[in-house]
Image (cartoon, rainbow, N blue to C red; front, side, top):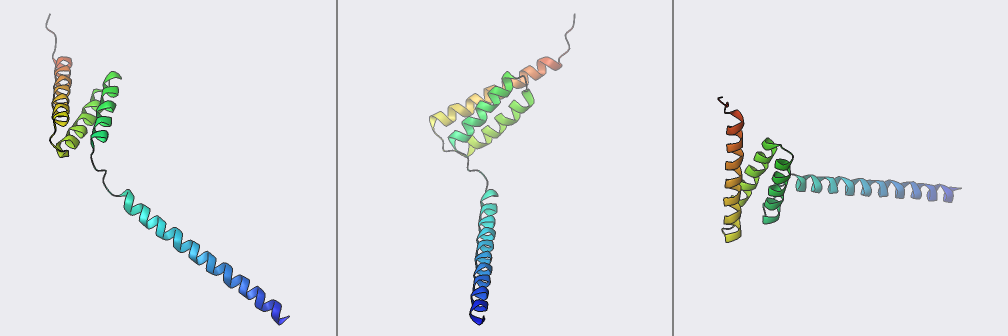
Length: 114
C-alpha cells in the first residue's frame, strides 16, 4: 500500500513538472515572438516594388488616395536604399506617378467653364 502511494505521488509530481516546463516554454516563446513582431520591416527593393505594384492596382481600381499613400510609402523606402541606377529610376518613376495623380486631382477639381 505504501508502495502504491509512492508511485502515485511520483506520477503526480512528474505531471506537475511537465506542466510547469511546458508553461514556461510557451511563455518564453510568446515573449520572443512578441519582441520580433514589434521590429520594423527593413526596406528592401522587393518590399518597395511590392508597394509600387499595389499602388498601380489601386490606381487601376480608381482609388487615387490609396495609390498616393502607397506611392509615398514606396518613395520613403527607396530613400533609405543604396543609390543605384535602378533605385534612382524607381524614385523618378514614383515622382512622375505622384505628379500625374496630382494633375488628375487638379483636373477633377477645376470647374469647366462653358
